[in-house]
Structure formats: structure tokens, C-alpha cells
Length: 418
Image (tube, rainbow, N blue to C red):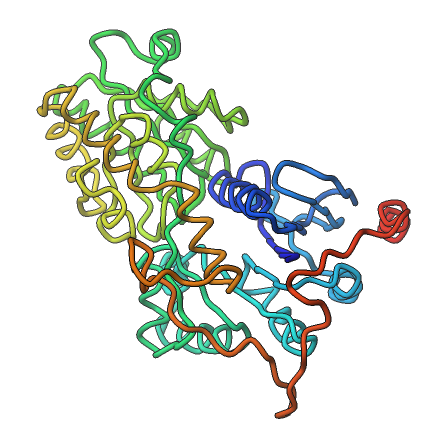
């Protein structure tokens, strides 16, 4: 089966989304399917990678977004999709790519939209009035456009449930439990940022308003006001970098920037005492899960989806500096081995193989189990046959058919987008 995945807002700084796309693609390939990922970028490219074929279409960056790009050329994307002849499409953007659900329906291709954020939550962060009404209207149209809507937590699914979306599925994401493990702790990394008598806190996420990175800075200030010798490392980059530097000018806040090497990320997370996740609209929080996999407890915003993910691996509190500082202190009162073991045990509940299996069931690529942990996870979706104006529209390619790429396809594509 050929699964074509479309994603926007993917940059070198979008760690969580890039990780999810990569791990799902690898899982699809390992399960015997053909994974194709289409993303925007600076220039055209077509590469075969461990996550399958990755096609990059040229796109200009959106102003004031920190380098985000979108697949804006609808005519070119339609030509590409028609040429790829997918059996399934999986879309990770419910705004500019919602039209691809209609494209798939007209061609008899099953479609899935993956909701990586809470629209109502984002509208709230942006200060939009009547955010729930706006989100409901938009989400209803999205659910009508796609055969299946996938959310990774109950928090993310809630805004679809309240409008009675019938084609809703919950599938948790996963974590690389081998790469992110307590053994990744590195004394040299720790000593680079903190003295032996200092408490090392880490914020690992994009420096954008929706993530509330200023709360991490304010937490350090609250701790130090309480005579706790805490220091903070901010691993990530984004539009808030300059403002945060001013905010933490008199505090021990170190900006590590975006860390591209995943082993280096694991070393930093494993070497921290506590990881802070202050974002109020996080719908899963892969960096938080990676921290727990490294044996590092976390403090998260109780308004987000993270309380249902962290369990005993951390503490969920209101989004204030005082509450976060108090939670850090409470975690540090627990015996070190106990708090680190609890964090690792919680992370071990989330593996990528189980997540891949859940996504493939949502794609109807494998049958739903009658028993076991995944039983009942995937709700029945709409019938496989799509209809246009009441007329059944059969799929053009059988699910078991493998169609080879035409010779010279890469060269032709490059010429088209040069």
C-alpha cells in the first residue's frame, strides 16, 4: 500500500512534528508499505530515506513565523498527487491542506487528517474572541473533508467530540526508548551548564508564544528568589528568542539554540534534574516524553494534554511561575532514584511500534484486534468506497498492488519545480 503523507510547517526547528513524521514513515516501511512524505522547502528534492521517499517542493517562507513554509501551489501539488497514485493520504495540516480531503474523495482514495494541535487552544493563545465557536465551525468542515480524524490524546480529541464528530480516532504517539534512556546522562554536558551544587532545569521546545517559554524563565527567577540555586538551559529557537534574552538577562539562563543531533538532545535531557513543559496547548509533547524516557521528571502545565501523558513521571500544576517553582522543589524532595525510575517507567508505556500499529489500523491497513491493549482504540470509520454526488468512486489502485516509479521521474520533477 502506498501511503502519501503531506505536512506543512515543517522546519529544522520543528522537533516534535519532524520526529513523528520520521518514526511513522519508518514504521510504515517496516510493515511492508510504501511511505511517501511531501513537505515544503527551499528547493525541489526527491530522496529515498529510512522513512521512505521524501519529496520537497519549493515554497517561500511565511513572514514572521520563524521560517515556516507551506505547500501553497495547489495545481502543482495536484499534479504530484495524481502522479503518485496513493492508496491512502495522511495530512498533517488542517488549514491550508484541507482541500486534499476532497481531492482524495473524488479519486476514491481514503484520507486521514492528523490533528497535532488544539485549534481552540491556539485561538485562545492568539486572543481570538468566540474561539470555541470558530473552532467548532472549522473542525466540523475538516471532519467532513476527511474519512478519518486522528488525535494523539483525549485533550486534542475533545474539541472534535463536543461537536459529535463520528470519524474520530485516538492514537498516542511514541518515544525512542533506546536512544532516550537514563544511560544518556553525560557529566560533561551537565558541568557545561551547572555547578555540582546547582539545580539544572531544561526547557526543550520552540521559542514561540504558544509554548510559553517565558514561564520557564520566570520559574528560575521564583526558585532563586526562594534561595534555590537553579539554572536554566533553553534548547530551541524561535521568534521569542530576543525577548527571552532580555527577560532572563540577570538570571542564569543559557540559550543552547536548536540542537539538531538527537543523541545530544538525549544527553541534555538525561543530565537535567527537571524538565519544564509550560505550554498550555500541548497536545502530546514528544520532548516531555523523551525527557521521562531519559529518567528525568517533568513539570507540565495542567491546562495542556500533558497530565494524561506524564502520569507519575512528573507533576502537573497551574501555569504560574510560583506553581512551577513549587513543583520543582517537591520533585527534588523525592529520592533521586525513585523519581528517575518513575519517569522512565511512565515513558515505557509509549512505544513507536504500538503507535505505528494504531495509525495503520486507522488507515484500515491492518484489522482491528478483538482483544488486547489496542482493542476498541480505532472506532469504525466511513466505508472504504468514496462517493461523488452519490455515485460510488472505486479506488484506482488495489491495496496490494505495487507500482514502480517511472524512470527519470526525479529528473522530470526537478525540471518542473526548478
